[in-house]
Image (tube, rainbow, N blue to C red; front, side):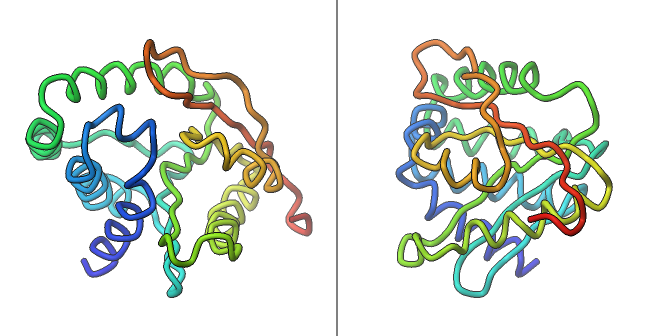
Length: 190
């Protein structure tokens, strides 16, 4: 699973300074553990990822796919979060998961779980390029696309790709986490 290692490396680096992720799980070590478990146990099994060889990656779930962890995935995730952020991080992750589930659209949709670009490559359009790869699939199925934006400074990027902020998730004491939705585009539109 070389792709899993590369995706985990890219996303861990990109999210190392993410205010919401650091609040939720407590440390860079726990962020890496989260991406490792979700990449291997959910997204590369039930979903898909895109990697740009210059250092960008995404993780997606297609419409109708399950994003649930297995029993052993939950154990690995819990252990990783406990070691990296303690019981507070486990509680915050549980609260976040409940709020995120409520925010997802009720209709079938593609879910962009994460997009990240190595810090040395940011600002070059690589994030938009790898997101577009997943959006092509969503558009080919006339499906909505949904994401949670943990860095409000990225809002203009998502808006250029057609996402619209729906609301801020209600998570007490947390940095902003914005629910964003994109309607399907015609195949010849960008």
